[in-house]
Length: 127
Length: 484
Image (cartoon, rainbow over all chains, first blue to last red):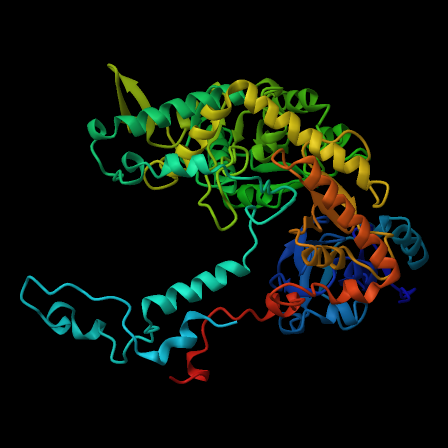
């Protein structure tokens, strides 16, 4: 699966789609493939404020439980409620319908250590 | 597969009650009508042979350590000697009421007192409580001790627990349940605690570190003294998860490595049953600084008599009813007495020898991501065995060969992990046979991959849908879909 070039990526295998100061966040195709069938997603409450690196959501598969970390400080302004009944959307469409949450980012400089699609793909391949 | 409720309309009676020797009174005179049900209970109505055959049939579908090899890494499914059971069945132990007066339970109290002494010596710690009833319960108790310690020192800001990315999943859960937040510290390229990452994480908000020695990769933390020293210098405490004690009994002791709290899994190291055959027992040992906070009651000796001491004002309180799982303590005590110092040392030596023997042979066929001398267990990877074959396929195929699969997909630092712990109780013949099976499965994976995808073929049930089981578990009997 191709990694959208307009997204940014983290070494925690998350993608970030930034529009203005609003960042939509999900886990990458690489991450969902490694986790296997996803059976449960725990979402934060809208309005939660987070620091960069905080655990904002949890993705549970048949093999393991993975944490989703806030790639930047900010406030949770949206969550993908459909994942509660259909967590498998993360497996089938990790970069689109399987988005997890939206953050309003306080400081875009937090994302400076993120990777572009090419950089992430070689990072993921090297793991 | 039938459940006992599937027979429920047969209207048999399984036993005869003796005649009443008091006047009969209707239940409506004894219990307020608002609490009485109006529909009859939907209980199975079966004869004794029907019940016996049903459960005997189910028991034949089970697989336990008495059936065959069970190399479940991290869980230590070693053989449970039958003598332990005989000792725990002695009438004086088995029929002792927990509320018996101490004057009538001196033998039981003596056993608890002496087991405490044995365990204290094995761990090299200041004191022991036998009350926790599982490893994770010991962890939770340890976290309560940490909390109490920092409260009484006036350091309420120490709210963080550090742990390694190879830690047992119960470690972060126990810390969180006790009110701590958890910070994961990545391990280094050798699978050990990264001292630099530890330095960066240690500060005045850290209550302590949870360590597993040897770690879940089966690797002994060679820097352990430096690790515990750093934590102590930073004002924190060290918790040692003792799940892997079976690899170093009589060789080294957590007390000598800097542990402040240590838990034993009697249901693993000391050969008492677990995994459905339990219950468990997870005593904890503490360093001198934490003795005053140990759970209530404590078994003590006063004027030549054993007593239960409830008068410990700084204790965290009781964490289980009575004094933990007493009969499990009896089995562990019997095991320690049977083996003695030399025997326990030999247990660890053979556990390590068996694991290294298998590791050396299997690394020729399977990827061994952390190569080196292991302790009682090691972690292979199913990666690269054949295209499209996962560790789950390999594990399911092992069932067809009459072997319980090892732990899979743990620890998380190894992709497609196969975590193997042969234990000291297995013979070389069993280890060779297991290696042959894993080698045969690797050949099958290349030559007939569909066989592995379809496995198990010979088990009572075929491949179960674990995704559906996790997402839509059926936890109740569907009475309404199956009218009587």
